[in-house]
Image 1 (cartoon, rainbow, N blue to C red):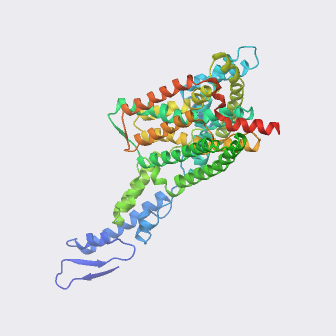
Image 2 (image 1 turned 90 degrees about the horizontal axis):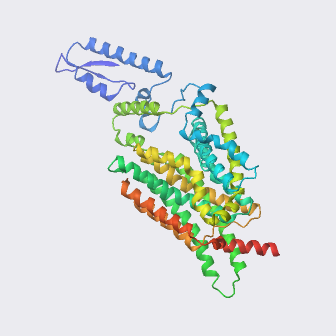
Length: 500
């Protein structure tokens, strides 16, 4: 540092700052009145003490130091390593017990398993295993979320995508293996409709009872809804193709059915690619779009001064540390819990699926009703409770993530996987739905797209969604039993391949 005296005055001093001092300090030092030696000495000591304190506290070069050395806004400080304390086995066990009040239903798990080996009517094991899967779904989500905190955002997102709809996936696989294709297709469609109309409607309604108007991240919601509309279009095209091509005299029903099956398989591969691209978009390239309050983006936009940027960056880092979640279980316990719960879900779902056909005969309902209305309640009951609870706490971004995000996963991930799995095991599972089922899904998707367009919600919008779901459920209940042939191309293809 070089100290110079202005020629016109003897009481004012100025200095030339070195590269390690900011322009703001230069301005502040120029404004100092008298006693330059004392002021400069105090300033230098203060500056060195601040640097020493920051380095001792952080263990590395501070953000301010990086900015003053020319890194500035172009070099975003890396996120610090997690500082949580590893929970003990006792703490993990208590966290599992206290994770949800739905845990009181775990008593139905051994009863449901035992009921399968008794001579009770099929209705009994169906209902008991139906109830038993509900707490298992909640515990499965709890273990997945806890494990996701340890593996980072990308792997955590993949874990949530895989196990987020594990119940629907397991039930669908078991039903598909037993060649219950109508149940599989109806359960896929029912999960989407249930999340969009029932769950989202209850979120809007109960949240609107407490708050006059609630707002949410419209960008994230519309992105998910747009992808959901793409998936809906993929279901419309096979039905439109079948209806049009079957009208030609030179096309037999079996030939058209085979073409629909090929279209469905190719479309399923494309849908999986779209879902993979969405995960990369959400977790890697455009993470700020899906934040509840994108503070990181505004930080870079507003910062014009390096010193002010340092202060805002420090505040943002402190907020992130405060909001950082810590695992509630040891790593081994989370993995063991995930494995055990997945196995129990598979067992209870197996016994549930075994009873479906007999229950339909005893209750006088179609497999379409069971798949569209009853089975989605099993897989989504825990998510229903979570979504409504967070909506009542005015956390609408999280509520929409549960409702719309889960529907999108079913449409872009689970349903295409079922088509490909059917292809592998030689069961003709397609994306063909009859006119009634296609219209029902189109109504649900269009309503949700329209209502989330403004980024706001109220109780009336929730009531509308809920009542539309009730109307659809009533219509499905009276749907004729021969509606099992709604998958005409699939069934005819199956019979054709069998005869050959």
